[in-house]
Length: 121
Image (cartoon, rainbow, N blue to C red; front, side, top):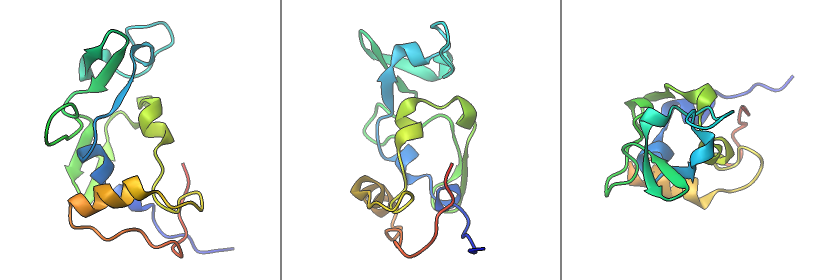
């Protein structure tokens, strides 16, 4: 059995504090079957919303708890949007994600190493 390293996202959070998190409004709990708490979003277009705090010059998602690069968590993780669900850390699925590297660089964090095993969601 291979030894797995802890998921690097649990100590990073740079993606949640680097980019706008936008998605179709129907993913919010304002729509039947939606999960993302609508009160944590703002309208950015007729059919799209963004997580509060991410539609600004220095984004920081309202759902991100903790200190980027130290220890973080998402307080709506099980209800997160497709945008968040589909974002993968570099090498998580065996593929490089330059967007992850860019977010990490914003906080002085090194890119993830492809040789480090990742825990998948």
